[in-house]
Image (cartoon, rainbow, N blue to C red):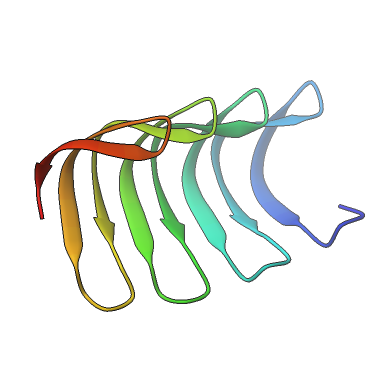
Length: 90
């Protein structure tokens, strides 16, 4: 894409849909399910600093059950909404 984003996977009507891998210009990646051009379903996002989130996505945001491990090793496991940790364990 013009901004340097690279997507490899399934497409539908010009948008990522189904399984795919995306590498972003900031060094982050997302591998998993897509719908209407955004992460939706199960997937793994890795940030350049080593932080990862694996779990459910809806409309491009972490929602439902997931696990986020920070670069320093801290693990948040539980329920997420709008990519915010709601409840669970740390």
